Amino acid sequence: MTDEQGFLHEVYSAFGGIAAFAQHHLAEHRLNQERLALLRDAIEQVVDASEPRIRLVGNYAEKLLDSVETGLRHCDGVLRRLPPALALGGHAWVTDPRVNAFFATADSLRATLGLDPQARTFFTDHGRAECFALLLMVKRETATFGTALAGDVMVRDVRQIQVSFSDHQLFFPAASESELRKDLRRRMLVFLATRALDRINELRERRGTLEEQRRQLQAQLQALRGHAQGLQPLLSAGKRRLAAMEQRLSQTEGELIVARKQLGTLDDYLEQVRQVLDHPETYLQLHPLALRLNRLGVKLDPDSPEPGETITLIELASLDEQRIGALVRFTRDELPPAEAD
Image (cartoon, rainbow, N blue to C red; front, top):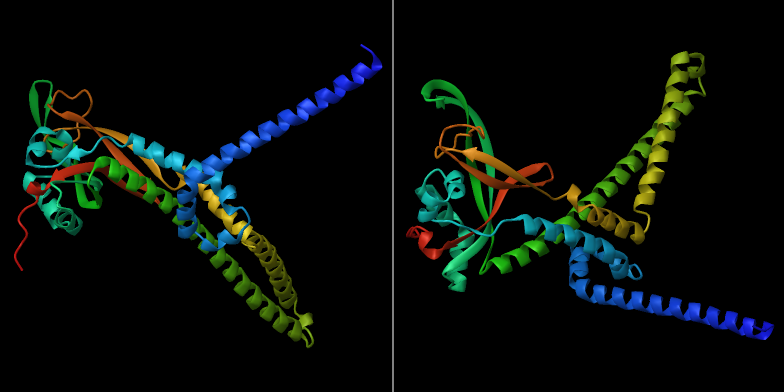
């Protein structure tokens, strides 16, 4: 190969590399634009629920794209772990150990459905024969004493754990399970966005508190330094108090600098939203629980000879609160007649 041919080969190679880089960059840009179009509605929901002013940030949607995708992936994971909708009704209370555990009697089940205004409104407004909803309950475990089998012998006054469920509430009635799951996906994402708003408000409050502390400390220091014009410097206690006050002011001013940086610009507000969406498991968790219960709701050991059923529960946890959750379905016929006014 001549020097001229070698030079041309290097030129062609360089142009080829540039072209390959440009093609890769273009393909990546197109992919991001497709993702952005797919998630645009979700991004706008997040902005509306957190801090609408971040729309003033250039390319705010692109900057939120990865974080919103992360948040939605977590929501989808939670929904996948929720079992199919559980049928509620008198027959299910007899045949399904989960329904039997959730409600003390078949009548209490019907009463729960009948007392829920959303359920009645759904049937009235939509004319549907069946309703799907999210059921949330509080699980309580109470120590008690009763009888139990020890081998073939019935023993009295055995310490037992009674499991009960209360505070039943129905949420988000829908015409189908797919519609309910779609609504829950949207609501979970909005929930995460509102956690970002809470975080922003906490930082604002923290900044305001530090600013007030600084004003008070400055006023107190000014008063102490005014006393120093008299005989106060002769007292060692006065010197120590002045030094301690100056140290507190310096510490407060340092904390205030950090607090102001956290929300100094709208980009900082956007970053707070991203931090929440990038760690959705901190704010919304799902835990499976397995319990073996008899028909009276007494917790049994896995190897207990007493008859019982093992049920799997789903515990939803958020903001230091835990609820047992289940997707449920029930017909209009399961509701007791409405009371006449």
